Amino acid sequence: MNDPISVSRLVHYLKSVLEDNPYTQNVLVEGEISNFTNHRSGHWYFSLKDESAVISCTMFSSYNRSVNFAPKEGDKVIVRGNVSVYEARGTMQLIVNKMENNELGDLYLKFEALKKKLFEKGLFEESHKKELPHYPMSIGLITGDKTAARADVLTTLQRRWPIAKVVDYPVNVQGKESAPQIIEALKKADSDGHDVLLLVRGGGSIEDLWSFNDETLAHFIYELKTPIVTGIGHEINDTIADYVADLRAPTPTGAAELITPNIMDVLEDLSDAKIRLNNSIKQILQRNIVDLKNIKRSKIFSNPERLYSEKQIHLHYLEQSLEKMISDTTYIHKTKLNENKNLLGQLISKVIKQEQIELNDYKNTLLKDLENIDLQKKSKLNQSIALLDAYSPLKVLQRGYAITTLNNKTIKSIQEINEKSNIKIKYIDGSAEATINHIEEE
Image (tube, rainbow, N blue to C red; front, side):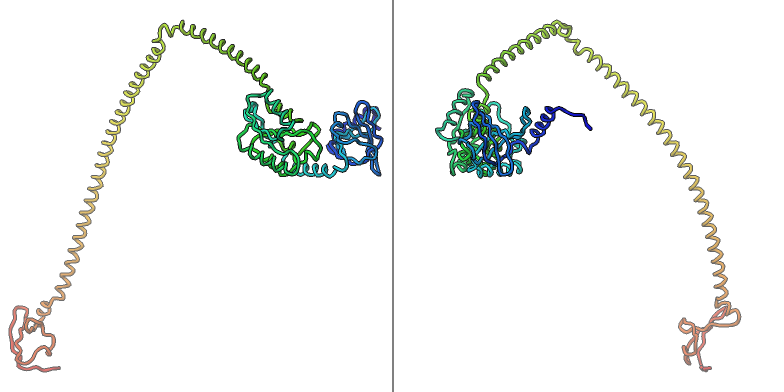
């Protein structure tokens, strides 16, 4: 078994659990009032019940002043509040900060539904909210014409920041025509290039403030390029426009105070800054004067040549080093060039000798080849002469044969001659002419 704890510790733990739970905070509850007590302190103590359960409620005077009806036993109401625990008695209770007659319950349900819808769409995201200018010089005021809210804002602005230019955009701040007029005024003000816009209205019931819960107006405020601050109703009044705006003030006067610095504070800050700046300049001047005196007494000013003499010596040294480097480099390259020239001459001479030897070898080989070719040609010529001599007709004539011709053409057949043909007969040692007397074929 765990160690026991005290009653107060347990009750305190339950209180912290309930107050840290988002589902039990800022909750809307519908029920019937019973045991209502209007305490002399101004606080209200009562119970809310339905047919199955009951819960104790407390509504402090700072909140119940905004309730526009006198609650009584049996009234059906809708309240908004935070669940907590009264530690002294260990009882759970609802700390109420808003109460509406159940007749207005539908409006509150619509308000909460739209609030949830726009929250899920991201219209209330802090990352989207624009930063307000520190010193606005042009302010657009969107509110009812000749209203107390307008007068309060102008009075506050004149008192706190009279150097700003304020441009009025009068609109109806309640009724069916109110939301469209506010949108048109915001559109005009946004295009006029103001530093900041104020959307304000005095207090009233939820019906009076309902035009500021318009969904189209909420989207338009979200898309504005100019930072906007709202001051609608009193601190306990919430509207959709307040959630979408870049900053929400509890009242119109509070909105005017939020967007402007106090000119007296600014003048005082400027005076302090001027004094600090003058002191700082004086200190800098004093240091510079001391530094200047020290510089005037320095050796550089008494002997300014020292500023460049060392550089001149260094430059002269570099010049000599450069000349020596160029001379040494030239000598090295010249020496290498002569060496390469001699080496190239030797190499060329060697190559020429080698080429001459190879050329002589080619010459001797060519002469031998020509001699061999000549011998081969002579041998073939002798063979051809011998063969020609063997087939020479003179050889045939030496054996007793003769060659007959007619008109310098050799006669090979008797068909080429006829009787009385004059023919020539060639012998080995001479020739004779004859006339054909008789032809006989075989």
